[in-house]
Length: 555
Image (cartoon, rainbow, N blue to C red; front, top):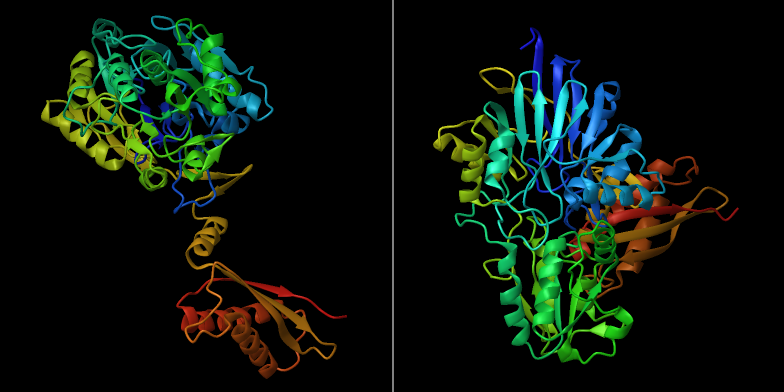
């Protein structure tokens, strides 16, 4: 190792939470390391912590401040939690983006959707071809996963080789994409791997993972037993599962329609890149309306409870002329990401209330995980034989469990969560620094922090409602309340009186006690009105809602 230089690993997302994956590697003198980034994905907020927000993206401010040292971005595969933020973040991180063909095609769509050019995205060939990026050489090692052309990264550094697993499983018979090849992984790892940075998603699952090839048969049997229309949902980007579900529908004698723009988009990319040559026949949505219900299968978006998804809309009643009735069946053929349980269960309950038979993936033969389970993780350790195992891709409990598993099996291990800077170049790898990191809410086209007052106000409005009070001024400066409006607040108080009238009188009398007021005293008036509303509403209905004060004048 060159004196004074160090090799660092810094997750900016994907560790401590599921989603928003972004990992940094650096080599050089402390504070002057040359950097590369692995993955640039989105996360999915729950409605309670970020109401109205559909997408989270990594906070890349630390990288933007060191842009002159950033060499390139490498994308392991095309799932949204690994590539979904590239279009949003690349304008402030304008460096070359490298990915395999299918992933590169998906990445370019992320640029197109934002009106940007995807010329920065470069297609690469798999290992053993390497890409030079400053002091790093990076190769894309094919691995099995639930999407075409997934890759682990083989990263050569001045002090040795790193294997960054990406998302992977040990599926030897996938329905789409490359099969698990232990000899290929062993050869690519070589003899001296400094660190294995490894997927921790299923570390708590003691059973070896199942092959995607085992899914279609049980799903076909379930469809056979269903008397009405059959609908199924999974991740839009899980092309292998889409194929399994469509195959099952055809085997059960059903016509299959795919519903949802994101699914059609990913299938279009898969078709254009040559991955859908033997995909089952899909009927257009317009034709599906005329097919008898007991002969139709819909594959729809919304496996994670997304509020504008097809699954959600069907659970409320109708989507583009399709509805679900008693006797119909609905299959969730995807693992529920932690944090999404409430929104997924809400859809399940609404479907059940409509008389629809609901089937889940968890513990069923209708799902095979794209991630390595505990025995599979142990096999990866043995294939790579690293000096140290660094768990990634999971909540903190997953990272800790994975670190303990590695130690129990005789490997050094280091717990590194998002924001921790680890020096992995010495014989004693350790966390040496912490940086400000986290995720930002993409609210429409605006980025805001999760603790931003906009999110705080929305949470409070959702919990306690809103009361708006209109304040007018007479010519002599006397202020009074001309009206009160309630949103999400009971209109009758405990004594069955009108809360709006009670508030109007109390605000007016309190302002009258202050005497004439200048309109420049807006902040004083707002504090007075807010205090009166909070105290009155608390006594009357047991709530302290958000307060809006509208100041007008009759001049």
